[in-house]
Length: 209
Image (tube, rainbow, N blue to C red; front, side):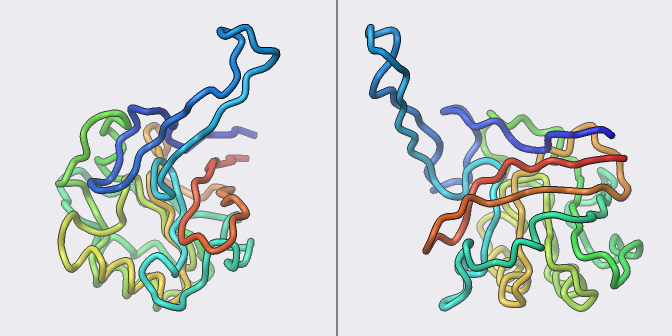
């Protein structure tokens, strides 16, 4: 059995989506100050690093992260690798998905981007038509290897989120799929059990038997 960590490390240098809050840590107690223990305070946006979007992110009245059934956060996942020449994921890339597959992660050229570099506005994303198709097939968990499932700074970005989330599929963004080959894996990506929050960081892993 092989366990593969597909999470982005969190630090003050971690790439964030423009306008989102990043990650910071402050020590309240520390050994450096001759305290008896290390005690820290963490401040971060809910969409920093590897994270899960719940419907409430873009759907008024949608479910918060703690209201999503746990079955969407683990199980079998199909990883599909998209050739570098494509700027977005379209219907033609979904031919290997059948109605038995409930989770799909997309590996693109995004996986070669550094997680502590400035945000790349030209990242590969999921098209509206592909999002529609994923819903029709019955996929309930959609993951991608960058900080947004949709294109940067456009109406389509919101539309892609809404297509998936209004049908109560969840989105996992910020996956680190560098070095991961296409195929079927087991995955675990549990959110924190926070109430009334639209997104949560996750420690995502793959397991290959």
